[in-house]
Amino acid sequence: MNDILIKLEQVLEQRKSAKVDESYISSLYNKGTDEILKKIAEESAEVIMAAKDGVNDKIIYEVADLWFHTLVLLRFKEIKVNQITNELSRRFGLSGLQEKAKRNN
Image 1 (cartoon, rainbow, N blue to C red):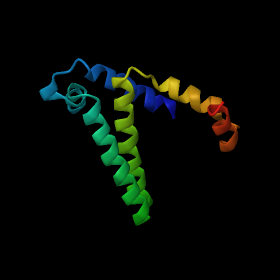
Image 2: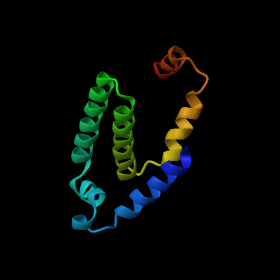
Image 3: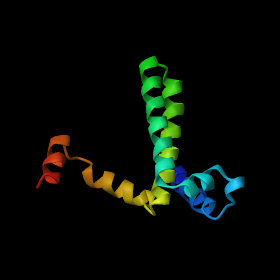
């Protein structure tokens, strides 16, 4: 699974130097955090609507869009995919209650 995320990360990094009028991603980077967050909010709403519709293919499609735009944010903020997967690995095997208690200390 990480292979496609790493490949996407590399492409998203390359898009930082692309011309704004030739790259959707470059245009998002150029507009900054607020525009990227708007896209994430929009995609989140679409995931919710797809889930309410109950059609798995729509859910998959919309979650892919959400993940993609989240990856855009991560690259914009210079956060690497492996930092996220490392955090998920750290949490693996902890109950949600244990993980939450660790954050509150």
